[in-house]
Amino acid sequence: MKLRWPVWLIAICLTGIMTAVPACSSSDSDDDSDKSSSTEPVNIKGTHTGTRSNTNGSANISLNFKQSGSMLSGSIHDGSLGNGVISGNVDGDDVEFTTAMNSGGVIVEWVGEAAEDGAKMSGTWSMLTGGTASGDWSVAR
Image 1 (cartoon, one colour):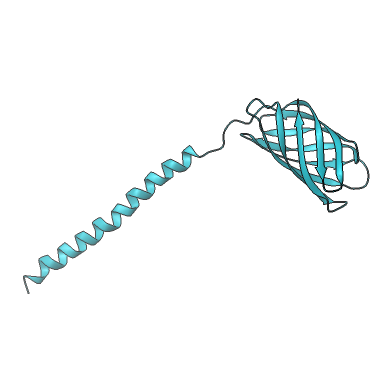
Image 2: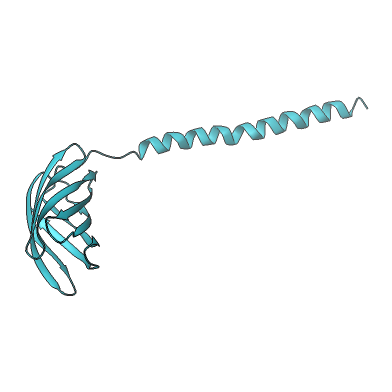
């Protein structure tokens, strides 16, 4: 019986050590998650002109962005849909915004990527209300 006591004690100690090792490695992964935090937003403020297109054709667009940190506001003129307001955000070079057009109840979602200097952007657009169209867009300052 005395021989079993030390074996049992060793088994408990080994179990405790093996349980502690994964805990140590998971704290290292927490450090890695801090490194993947969002980056400074690209500065895209100002007027950008270009086109949005789909299988039905294209329209000239002018996007006038106001930017405060990562938050976007501003105005849009769309050669087909008219005028509207912009609301959205920038995370690094990722740009996401919606435009609410002044007539027709049309709301469009725009998702894209900006160049490092913010002078060019491109991506995809899709109507959330007022239609079902979607396509690509590209603008430059």
